Figure 1 (cartoon, one colour):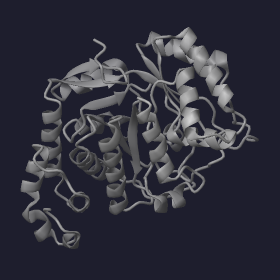
Figure 2: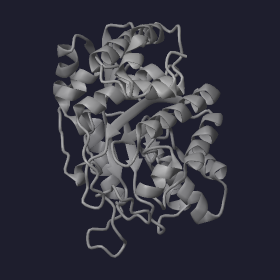
Figure 3: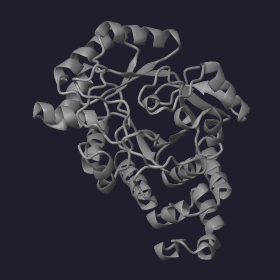
Figure 4: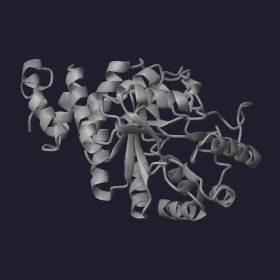
Length: 368
């Protein structure tokens, strides 16, 4: 072990072995411990962290291209019983802005996505007690019949957990029925910070840490893939971020089902007024995630929350993928953060970072 927890806060001791630690980690000769990762969070040497993360990214992805995909985030309802303190999107059923998407509107959005070169939809929504499991089965079946080549990347672990409670059945049965109906992959949404101390502060009605991990484990055991996420910069400490990464890595060691990790910063909302963290904290967390999650093949940049310039810079801090063109995004936008891009702009950003842009699907298979 290069760092002891007791060294945190002592810059001299922390930097003594920093270069050696990062070099061996980047080259694949050392696996970061939890204490070492925590010490890195307390480090201010962003440039060194970035160099190490980039070196590791190039080792794992030596090809001369970097990837992106084209999809659409379709929020099927904004009615939600959770009402998390950080969310500006959800509302009560009685709210005049409440909605449940119609089948015709869903198909219109999918048609537009396909016309723009998309190959999947990201389907997520609030926890609406009026939408039972049969509603999703019928919707997925209809989508699969009409668009057989389209991947449904949908229903976070939170939504699966909620449907199981609503129907009084196991999460395993929910997953099996959704998969039979056409669910392709599961997004990592709803993870926020995988620590119940933090979750109690920001989303007390939401899925607990063990249940989030259990949904992902069950899905992976069924042969399914998913992504892992982290939303940070609200009520958590560096220790909480480190614990979150450790839980993702431990589950990946067990199942190998995560295709990618995506982190983004909390966007301040009136109900939860935590101070917005900046670019320094985002890039540091991204770099540490790349170095710590040695078993997760892909790290996405979050240009949707950071903007395109920082998204491009993320390719030098461990990211090997620019994420989605995101034809439509409503949840982050509801908190006032709105960034848009065309496919040509996204490709240009990758090219200007020194790589060839390549479109991929959700399984990171090249589409061109």
